[in-house]
Image (cartoon, rainbow, N blue to C red; front, side):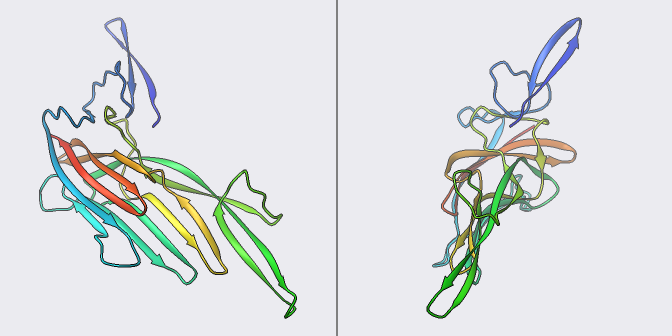
Length: 241
């Protein structure tokens, strides 16, 4: 998360305030805000979830879960895991999306670099040749053939928050569909081996939430863990006015 520095002049004195979403013992935030704290939840509504959302090609699992933040019988946020079986590869996805225009999440961007290249193989027994195309995460440590092309993908993720982080108007609040972790598993002649997702392997961290009702913003968080195409939802909280 990026922090910006603002300097205000007040009665001939300067007050330095670090805004953004990070915690800071010296931070003074004049706007409404919420500091993530699971121990002293003063004026905070909390609810336990204790659900595991899991994607698999085999068996029956809970693949999505919706959260109604303000208990108005309208779902606000959905977590989901899915797997799509293509002809030559499987596409796995774990993510979160907002379900209405009242709720937004604290979001950051990351750039994924994709290496694409092909290799020709010749079979002398039948005088035949094939060309295999590869798509994978680019690695500076790997040697590629001369037909390599590198492309980029911009992916939006929920910011990984910890206890003590501050949620306030300066966070990057957005609505939409966001990745937690994503994989293309390769098999067959078309090789796909692309992985992304900054939430991969994350345990007991928080997504920042802002909920607006009647033009009044309410800040909150959702505690979760994410790994192996599995989202474990622990609990959520919303600051009351």
